Length: 402
Image 1 (cartoon, one colour):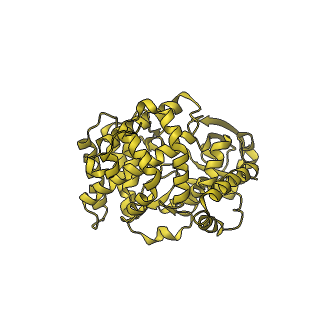
Image 2 (image 1 turned 90 degrees about the horizontal axis):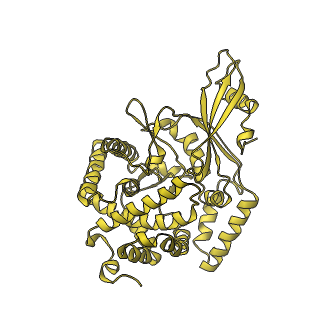
Image 3 (image 1 turned 120 degrees about the vertical axis):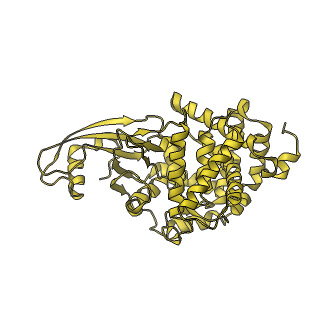
C-alpha cells in the first residue's frame, strides 16, 4: 500500500516501513502525530510532519519525518503527473542524492506505482508529441489529462525533517549574506556536474529543452490570462517580449542549451532552501531536476528574489560571484562574458516560464497570492534592467502593443 492521505500514515504502516529500512530494531511505532505543513503553498504536493512515538528498545528511528504526497488539488495533480515531477523527485532521492556535493534531506522511502507502458513509455510519448499535428497534440493533451484524473499514479516520499533549520521566504527575501551562501552552494553543485556525461544516463533527468512544442502551446494558451491578471504590473517591454516568445521561445531555448550543461535544480528559490543553525544550507524539492546551462538556475533564483529596486549593476555582481564559484569548483572553459550573456538569455526564457506557470497554479491562500505578485514585479524589474542589446530586435524596435 502507498498511503495517499494523512490517515493512511498509520503507526502500523510506519512500523513496517521503518523496519524494512533497518531503523527500528525490536521497537515499533506506537503512535504518530500528523501536522500539515504550508497548506496552500506546496502547489504540487501535500506535505506533512510526522512526529513518531517509538517504543523503547534498540530503535534508531528518527523522532520525526516529512511525508510528501501528490496534491489533492486535481488540476495541479494532473499538471504534476504530466510533467513527471513526482517520479523525478523520487528517482533523484533514490538514485543520486546519496552522493550529492551539497546537502539535501536524508532519504527514507520513495514509493510509486509502476509506470504504464514500462520504462520506455516516456521516450515514446515524447516522440509522439513532437511529430503529430498541433490540433492533434491539443486533443492528446486533453485525453492525457482525463486519463490522469481517472487513474492517477500513487507516489509517496519520506524524508528527513530539517527542523530546526529555517526555510527561506521568497516573499520576504533574504539578506546579502544569505544570498551569498545560496549562490555559492548553487555554484558548487553546478561545478561538480559540469559537462558530466553521467547525468545523461539517468532517463528521468530530462534536458531543459525537452518537449518544446508542448511548452510553446502552454505559453500561447497562458499568455492572455497572464496579461489579464497582471495588467497593471506589466510594462510595454514585457508585453512585447511575451508576445515575441509566442513564436520564438523554442528557437531561443535551442540556442541557449548549446552552452555547457550541468545538473539543474529547476526550482531553485528561497522557499525550497533551509538555513541551518550551523550556518549551512540544505537544498530540498527536487521535482523538476533536469540538465542544462547552470545560469538558468541562477536567473530563476535572482529574478524571484531581488527586490525591484535592485540595480542592474548589483545584479551583475551576483552573476560574477556565481562565476567565481564555478571557477573555484574547477570550471575552466566558461568565461565571465559568456556567463553574463547566458544569464540574460535565461531571463528572457524564464519570462515564458512565468507566463506559463502562474495562471495554472491556484493561489489558494493569502501568501500564495502575495508570492505570485512579488514574483511578477521582480521579473518585470529584471527584464526592464536588461540592456537593449540583450533583447530581440523586434522587441526594442517596435512600440508597445495596443
